[in-house]
Structures are given as C-alpha cells and as structure tokens.
Length: 163
Length: 224
Image (cartoon, rainbow over all chains, first blue to last red):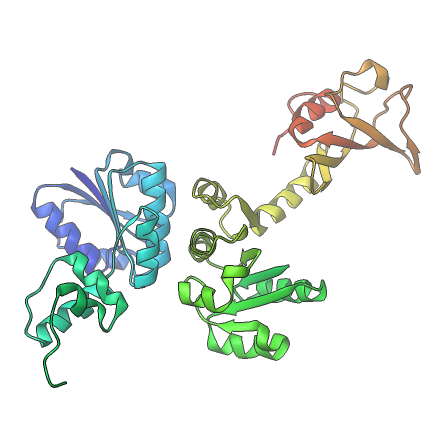
C-alpha cells in the first residue's frame, strides 16, 4: 500500500521508517528540508518538500494512489485541514490526524475525521503506570478528557477504602 | 447583531472598531498576551484572551448566541478550524473566513465554509483592472439580487464601435445606463451610436458579465 505521511518530526519519521520496513511504499512531506535528516540514509521512500495543505504538494507525494494518510505535524490545525482535504478531495480510505488538543480531537472525530490525541494517550498511560494498573485499549484513554474521574470510572476501578 | 471576531491583528482590530462604531455588539478573541493587553486598552471588556480554535475559548466568548463569527487571523488553517468549530459545534448561522493564500478559497468551499475574503485576490484583481485596457470593470456588486454595476471602455477595435445600441444583442436584463463621452455624461438612449473611447456604465446580472463583455468588446479579451 502507498502511504503518505505529513510531517517529518519524531512521530512522522518513526512512522515512515516502520511502514517502509514492513514493505509499504512511503512518501514523507515536510516544509523544512532539515527535517528529512531524521530519516536513515537508506530510506527508500520519497521525500517531498512543501506544505501539506497544498493539493499540488499532496499530488507530488502520490496522494491519488494512496491507501492511507497520516498528518503528524506539530500544528493541530494544519493536521486537521490536510486530513480533511485528503479525505474529502482525494477520498483516501484511511486518514488519521494527530491532534494535541483533546477537545478539538473529539470535535473532529464527531465530524468524521479519525484523530489521535497524544495528550490523552500520554497522560493516561502515565497514570496507569503510576497506579500500577495495566495499560488498556486506546479508546479508553480518550475518557481521560473527563479528568480526573473519567478514566477510573470507565475502567471500573474502585476507589480505595478509607480515603 | 452579536459578532465574534477571531484574531486581533490589524484586520481584526479595525474590523472590531468598525463594528463597534456601527453599533454592533462585538467580542474580539486574541491569543497573544501582549497583543491582548493592547487591544484591551482600546476595547475593554470586549476582548477575550485565548485561542479561538479551542472550544472553551469560543464558549467563553459566547459563541452559542453569536449571529456571526469572522475568523481573520493571518493563518488559513486557524481560520478554517475557527469557522468549522463555530458552525458545527456552536451552530453559528453565519461564518466568514479571511484567506491569505488564494488557492485555499476552493478548499474552504468544499469543506463547508462558503464566505471567504482574500485580500491577496482583491488586490490582484485591482492590479489586473489597471493592466487591462479594454475590459469590463466591476464598480460594485449589489448586496442582494446578483446584479453588478460595471464600467466598460470601448476601444477602436471593439465590435460595437460604429453600430447603434438597438442593433446590438445584449444578454437579457443588461441595462446600459450612462454614457461618458469626452467630458460629458448622459443617459443612454437606443439611438446611441458607439464611438471609440466611449465609457459606459451598465447594470449586468453577475452570470451574464462574460457574455456582456463579448457583446461589446468581442472575444479574445482577457478574462479574469
């Protein structure tokens, strides 16, 4: 499958390498040429210099034949806009946007854009580690937005007695 | 009318000022602290500090009862998200987005934001008007009804030159109103015979501007 990754930061570069190692064809877009240094020398995928909300740039990255698209820049709104363009305009079947702001992530999930919020995942996993509880399914961490009680209630954890 | 202006740069500042002067109730949202302090000096309690892309900020600004949200930050992505949040999350009836890159106008449209303003495009079209010698120049678009008031200057090679108005097939509902010839302006009559250098002011349906142009100036005139 051909996959386009927007943003060659830590997440984008790691994702691109992982997908390539699994034999997928990958194109990475970033507006800063230096960002591509995060990719290994033997990276066989394509690198495209440009902004991810520009349709010409997306086309150059092969979006028209892509089976998946991940928006991983550090700008929530850039990710939201590019994900929508790719989904609506190019009808790519699997599109995911990384969104730090949990409320915005939720709002766009309701609008049909699949989002992942590293904020909730990170905080939720730290919580589970600290309290000695096992890690759980991604969806459960989204309930952490109703913090502080959301996660505990959803997972059915019982508060300790005497507190 | 209750209006929320998102983004307190120069556009947001003057827009808020104009709206206040026009007697509208306005809240201005600005996310940079320093800029916020400055704006508060001018508008007092009408300024909210926060990121207008965030649901909580829009809520705090009273988006639930806003009749119009104008997103005028310098960032197209931000303006898109602000408008979408206002429209979908708060059911604001009318949203307007400022667009910096003219290419994004189409994108905004297919993502559900119909009303956009692009200063780049506006200025570009003004420059184009200066450059083209023989063309139809929009003077003003009437707010409702899709009619445009346009000006057209005839050159020696315009096909209309030498002919009379009644012999020219104008598109339906086009009205030639005023003729400026030399220093004299007069009301157009059907026995007018066109001369090179004539300037005409006309009322034209927006959809017919192109065929109006062709009727008077012929084909081969650059189109916008």
